[in-house]
Picture 1 (tube, helix red, strand yellow):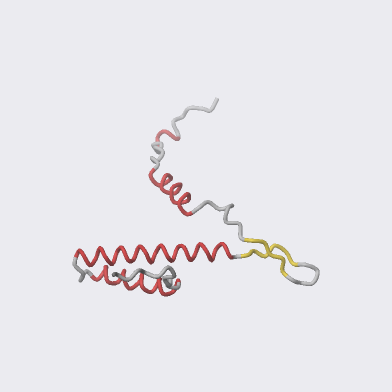
Picture 2 (cartoon, one colour):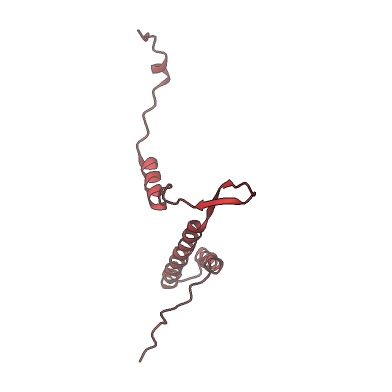
Length: 119
């Protein structure tokens, strides 16, 4: 019988994933890997990148903002409001739309001072 992966597979820390991701990038940029090895490294890199993003998201949700100081000088906190900011995907989509939108045609300099009046 083949061994089953334990249900509690240890997820690497953010720092471990980032270090492994940097190593993978260096290997891929080195150009010494074959196609199959490059694809395996790329897929592993994507998994580590996803892990980093998930851990950053979780940390972001834990952030508390100092909202005010009470009479005793103690900070009063409120949970980080991640609902007020658009998600990473929404921001990326909006940015992509702005970048791919056609540029407005610029008027020729002769059109600016064409001698016509406003009235």
